[in-house]
Amino acid sequence: MATVAGSEKKSELSPGDDQQNPWIEYAVHHAQLMQKTIEETVDSAIEAGGSRLSEIRSTSSAHLKMTLNVLQDMKSDYHAYEDLFFEKIKEGIFLAASNPMVTCGVAAGLGFLTLKRPRLFLYHKTLRLFLSEEALVSRADAKVKGLKQSIEFMKAESEKLEKRALQAEEEMRRGRTKLRQTGNQIQGVIRSAYKIEGQARGLKDLLGELPRREASLFRSQVSKLASEAKRERNALMKEVTKISNHGISV
Image 1 (spheres, one colour):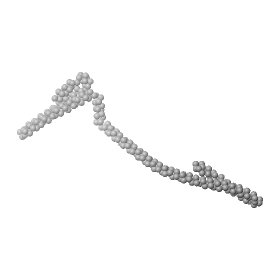
Image 2 (image 1 turned 90 degrees about the vertical axis):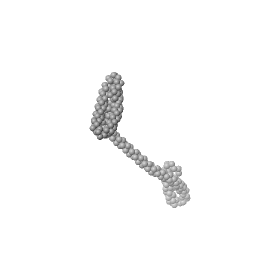
Image 3 (image 1 turned 90 degrees about the horizontal axis):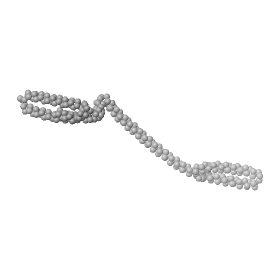
Image 4 (image 1 turned 180 degrees about the vertical axis):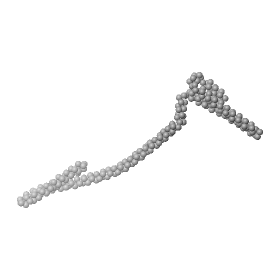
């Protein structure tokens, strides 16, 4: 049965296909020889089983008949699966013949994987790839954690600096208030110095009515006091100028 099917499949190929793929006929021929060899092996096994069963026919004829029937059924099933198997082989051969590039690629790939060295090489390369990915993931995770720590540190420092800025601003506000108050007090002292200078000038006029000796003694003392008042007034006016330079009105 399989031989006839193989002949029909072979007859379907055109002369051009035989010339293009000369190895197809050779492959089909070997498949048919393999099929014939398997059939002969099965037949010989069945005949041997039959001869062995004939020896014990006297003891169990019913068992012999049942066994022979089972063997015949097994042979029929085998022929059915055998025909299907060789039909698939032939289809694969024709498919390989129609796609030689794909067939060569698949064969090369399978041959590459069946060899021990290439298989180990591929395994180690794949293992290194996964290890490299794990290393990259670990490195990325470490960098992310480092960035998180840096951000947390920056937040803590920002809070500290904000508190310091608020304290400095409050101190500056209090300092401006103190400077304004001090400037006002200085202005009061300056006005007092002006008054002292005015009183000294008036006292000098009164001293002109005294005798010359006594008037000369008091006049020198009054002049000295007026000079000290003027010197202090000038120093205080410089401090007021400094306060005004800070933008504080006095």
